[in-house]
Amino acid sequence: MFINETLKTKITKEYDVIVCGGGFAGISASLASARMGKKTLLLEKMYMLGGLGTAGIVTIYLPLCDGFGKQVSFGIAEELLRFSISEGCEARYPENWLDGIGTRGENDKRFEVQYNPHIFAMKIEKFLLDAGVDIMYGTYAVAVDKNDDKIEHIIVENKSGRYAYKTKSVVDATGDCDIALFADAPTDTFEQGNILAAWYYSLGKDGYNLRIYGAADIPDEEKVNGNKTEYLVDRRFSGLDAEEISEMVCLSHRATFNNVMKKRKEDESYIPVTMTSIPQIRMTRKIVGEYVLKNEEVHKYFEDSIGMVSNWKKRGPVYEVPFRTLYSGKVKNLICAGRCTSTDQTLWDVMRVIPCCAVTGEAAGTAAAMTDDFTSLDVKELQKILVNNGVVLHENDLKG
Image 1 (cartoon, rainbow, N blue to C red):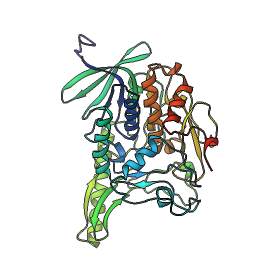
Image 2 (cartoon, rainbow, N blue to C red):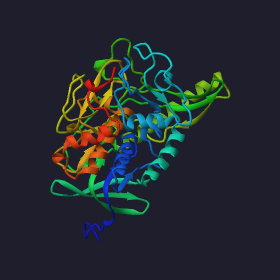
Image 3 (cartoon, helix red, strand yellow):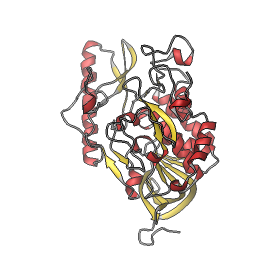
Image 4 (tube, rainbow, N blue to C red):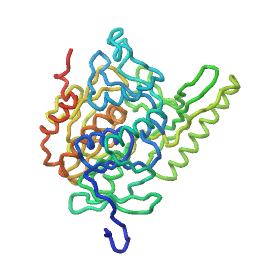
């Protein structure tokens, strides 16, 4: 059977849920869906899972807590943090949170860790396969086939050619909101653009280390109290143009090489042991959902909250995440997770990190397993399932 007799796009398997993108949002969504007993497919263009958190060497699992002693992100977000260091922690081990040693005040360690990307990628792959998730590597989602306001097929390209998967619901965890764009859902782009980063792992006299070369970006309005952005080149990148991305990767490689050569003048044993295999692009495109969560909506109660996240850059702020930020009613069976969700420009930099990806991924995967129409989903039932799985929905439900 073919979708289009001219294009000859062959329909292969059928799934209840297709998750596009195998970063932490996609991992969380596919795990949640499979645990609901749904036939789930995870599509990933690379040949390892984890996205920026593995292939991009951004191996810091940022805080699950508010910085003042309260954990705010739970469920799969906490499960994956503990899973990431199940074979040992590289750095940032929070003994006050994991071992109960010490206090959790404003001057103490936050609930975050640094993990090894290779061990995590290998272990999480088996973990998802054991949970019943089908994984297709080297596979790009390149288009969708719609019937009215629902996606019926995800069209992909890989070594086998171009073909289509039939599905009931879709999770867009691509990081670039590609599926929403293909499906004509409303989207928005990151106005400020991304700066160049060139993180890598090294080995030398000081041991094995993550080199954070080219800092993560800081929004213009938050460059106060000594916050500074380290620029490797005097320009920004949208992350949405193929030629620009290729140039960005070349510049990153050159910056890494130059930094290694500089270090080798001080330590002749110094070598790079891992470089990024994907561009370190943080924010590109997101959905404009039924609700746009705003940076100033700190500590705000949302009746349709699907979990909470903290601000990794400063202590104190807590955000409840409304279910309405995950979808647009214009494509009823498409839901977004991770950095694709609906926020304003400033909050985007908070919502793009691993704990937020896991929180929204779990909610998106659970919802996708429940319905093929998110506009009519019983949110109370979704919340009940999330709570039963350990998620805390509202700030006033936190202990302590």
